[in-house]
Image 1 (tube, rainbow, N blue to C red):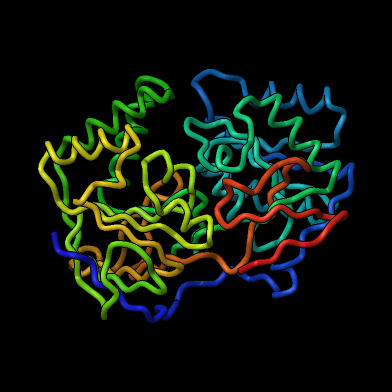
Image 2 (tube, rainbow, N blue to C red):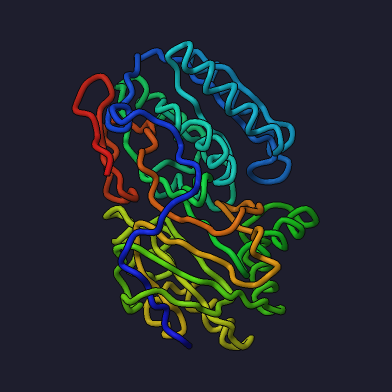
Length: 371
């Protein structure tokens, strides 16, 4: 396959930058021990038929902590409810909490990040990579207890966030085969229910189906990896994957997990391959041994400009962001966000497995620094 040739000069960004004053990029938010929780819940997250909203409401009432539960009956309601929660938390000195899968967490974080307010998470999805990477329990009762301990201690962690144009991503953003995989997975889940087995079976079916080629012009800044550092290149690929989650990269067996911890994004490109070669890569990914896959082009970078060259993609291209697909205008600008997401965690939580993460205290200790 042709190697990707990349420029060492940072790309010029034309995407909207999320507004946040420089002093608030560095300062950890101040938290009162009784700060109210404004919980945005995706009713569709988690396993089919689980009354997550009812159970979460019962747990919050039993804990005796002030809260307001905002339940999205449709995914389209999430952005509005997230903005509502941000305004309420700003007025009351509270915490915005996202309860759902990675897609729900992404939507809420999109509203929270520009505000500089603290955010908590209660994972309710299938894979929950963002929660797992931040040592959040997958058990709702345990996760809520840890969240309340973090609020009472006023303890937050500054977590790295990725941007593609003006959209954030907590776990990954990709184009090509991966968005189609997500759409096929959601279609199968509607028929068979939400589970890891259904997700894996759907992914295998998509991987062995047809593939479309993308012609991309790549330009990256300050990269490391197996791609030569020259003037820029045009590359034919079936998938571009940009990761911000070291846990996911580790499970695939990719060394770029360490680069993400140091403040970069990880880019992986897969060329058009035969079905047997794609199946082989899927097997290696499941076994966590992708590091030795010579078919892949991989590198780490803090900024990457991607311009689709085919006529049908010049106005816009489908991008999968944290498990949800949407169209974004071309060219695509991937980069590390200039500000961090202030995640509420219990005092004993470590920053060991956090992408660019730093533990910090809100009212009781030093503020974390941003890159």
